[in-house]
Length: 113
Image 1 (cartoon, rainbow, N blue to C red):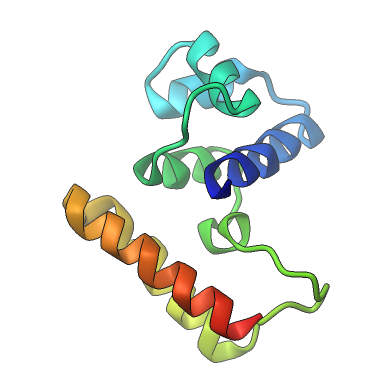
Image 2: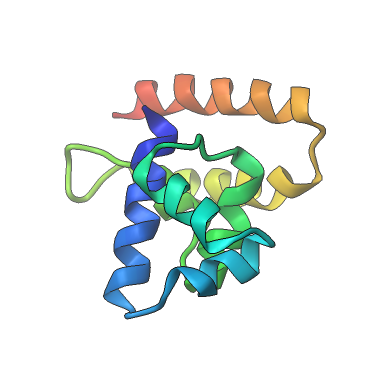
């Protein structure tokens, strides 16, 4: 599941930086136990939570959200520009638009991998 993979990457980044869950909880304006449930996949990660979580760790949203079998990935200039634009738009979109965008990103990702 996409949300669990993203949460696992964010958890790994947090741990690598030796930051506590309280750091992420403050950024997401939620309790430490809620962050723990997100990281363990018990609670589903919502699209609008990705940006503040990634930002709190100094990560770029587009890097956190994508994975590929190829270590070089589909990271050419054009793809990075598209991902940056998507990341900037996410916090400003209404829920139905975010859902549609996530589906379009899935389709785009499958066509680039």
